[in-house]
Image (cartoon, rainbow, N blue to C red; front, side, top):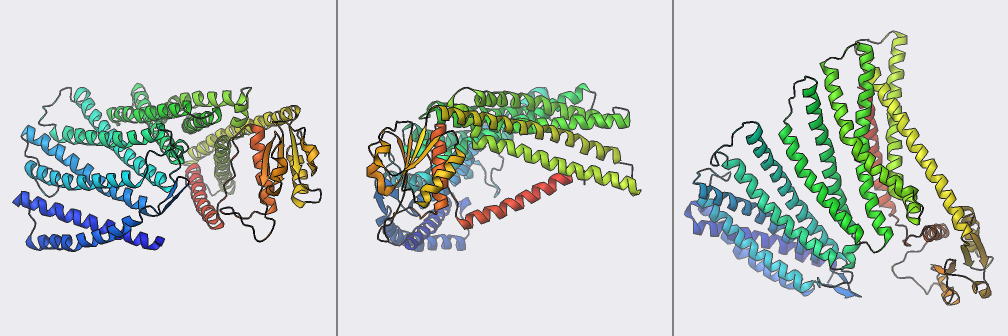
Length: 639
């Protein structure tokens, strides 16, 4: 069956089944409670939807199921649109189930309290809401159970082999449900804590339960439903991960999910903590505090739970990593996330401190505005500095340790992105501040400047310039230190006696290019170009042989590591699934693999984007970069 036809069949099945399901829900609600009955024209429409939609679904579903799984080769399942249809249908059913479950809990809650509150926008009372939600839950749950059964029948969920696109789509489905349930849980918990703190510390009295029904009922209902949804989806994702499934162990989606929640949780905790500290310092300085500390405290507790739990999961994943390199990688990304957040908050605080000092010199007094700024910047320093110091100290200890992991730490992409990000921010700050300072000085010299706000503008620009220069010098020094250590590591590798043999003819273009290029890149490693089998006899397990695929038999019995370059002897030969590579690309691949061997890393091919995707990313990145630079310049210059 063609792929386009399968997409057509599954699209028709999705639309027709959803239409029939909701038509049945509307009709059942009207039968069970006449007050929920729609007008006659709407009833006739729902009946027509069922009469027409059900046969259309059954006919198309029967043909779609005949080719639900297209083929399975070596345990890798290629299913086309099937898993997308299956999990999208489950998402489309679970979403309304969550909404109706919340409505049902609210209705039961109001029924127990004897409240006459209207629960839904259309004005239903408690009994009507119970009937409406129960009918929807019954129909949608039956369909959900049916599709869960389809999932178990069509996909081998217990397989330890790669499941291809099935695992990818299922993983996205579970994490989407998980983050939805977690969001409901955390925001409901924050709302409930905010109400409790308000009753205890603001009103000084605890109000009657009936008067708090609207607040407590909504938050508790969402909290329970969100907690159940999160636990079911996240628990299932965890069971797949711990069952030894190969796809789950190396999942990038799982890592993105965990790191994103750690980033959001830690960022919210740090910034909200700074807000609380600023409020305390404002009160200490005799200023009026307009903020609600109880809201900030509730947010710190809620997002602190998100941060601490997912940090614990990352720590546990690191312990279960198959090797020390994977464990270090998991910890490294987590630490750099915290270091980025902490250092960004610290920079804001430092810039504010210098800004205050300069403005105090100009104004010769400490007014309310300056005292409020003192409170804000001091709070930023107090909140961000511990986070940055703790994480950055661990990062630096790992990079300076006397082991192979330290080499990976210094050469990791995460470290380079972190360092160059702050170098970029520092450079842009100097650029923007320099523009502001020079333009104001030129205006003064030419007599076209107003001196009303000149001191504030200059103080703002000078303070950020000083901070930016210090940040640039510090991170530049770190880069130089890493470079020196990397040179020492390469010398150490050379002293260990590693040899690289390029097993190719002397006149071969790739062999000659490899010999000269590798000699420049790895000057401390012995590199030899030879095509004699006797030169391979004394190679050890630490040595490396680079050869064409035609010469696999000649190098197969050596003890060394082997890097094989695909070669096609004639036009009758083709490598399936492997695109043809230019000479320069093959040389780069060899250099990358050799660098990974020297560093003790797992050998992985460098991933390359297609020309269209790369061009699109460059355009999008340029637009975002331009907007960031222009906004930053306007912020620093005060324009």
